[in-house]
Image (cartoon, rainbow, N blue to C red; front, side, top):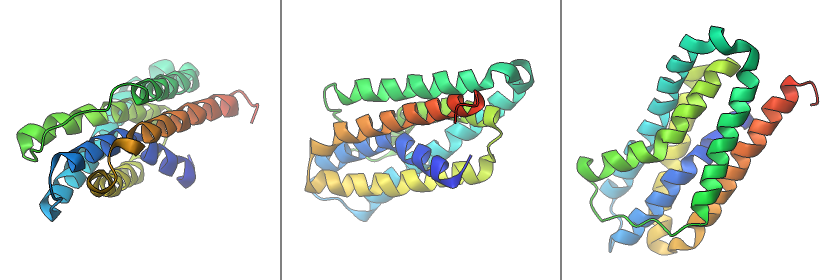
Length: 185
């Protein structure tokens, strides 16, 4: 998998964290550096951890389903992408102004579940996992920090557009993987 593809996956996966970060920015009267650090570290950390866990699980089953791994990658990325698009059309998320572990841990887990499935896909595709999870974690951290400041400054306007775009990119990457394996691309 090329760097550009990994970068697009990282940005796409970060869109849930971005949307919640925007909400967190809306929930406080003033964004402080500790707020930005909390969203960046929680969201970036979990977005890096979950694909690693998915990768380790995927490696265990790779030999059993190697012949259909491209279909699994296509279906997982498509499912995640369509889910993100569906969420983008729903009600904006509401979160409270707390930034402690009790508030941030469930949000970090919830926004990174998609990354677990992508990690399984990485195992099937033979992606070098350490650079991939490093990139995903860093990109999510940066986007989340930007999201909290954007949320305070601009508001809910960009939430749904970001999730929709992230979902569309994942669907397109899933299609690309399938078409490459079938020899069409």
